[in-house]
Amino acid sequence: MGFCSIDGAISTTIVGYTGAGYANLSNSAGAGVEWSVNSATAANRTITFRYTNGGSSATTSGKILLNGVVVQNSSSLFSKTAKGTWTNKSFTLSLKAGVNRIRLEAGASAEFADVDYITVANASAAACQ
Image (cartoon, rainbow, N blue to C red; front, side, top):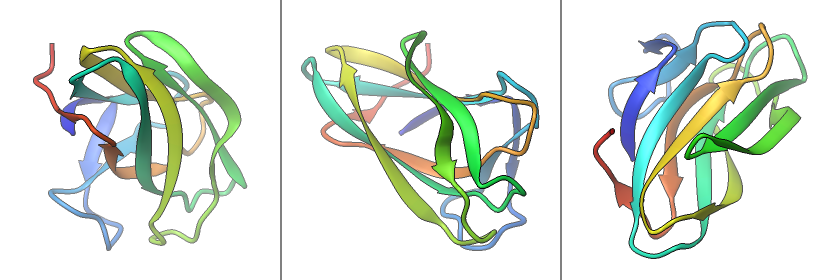
């Protein structure tokens, strides 16, 4: 999908990522990573995040924003995995027709899951606006 920005760094320390690296957010509440996607029609779409979460907490607190609006807010957004064990978690979001901005954001000043990539069913990458 169309990667736009990160409050942190693209890292390569943990093996098994795809592409140039994975999103490693700074450990602060509100830090996030953003993507831009295009949906031909307004519809519910499955968004899948590939992540690893080897932090000290059992889960990662965070939220998903769609076009600036919080659509998922959870104290257990991503479950703990062994560091370097990449897994997928899916959510259903209601995308509008055209360009949509998806932001994954940390809910606390603590370790956050490292995100390799997202996929969005029946949507394509879009330029960041």
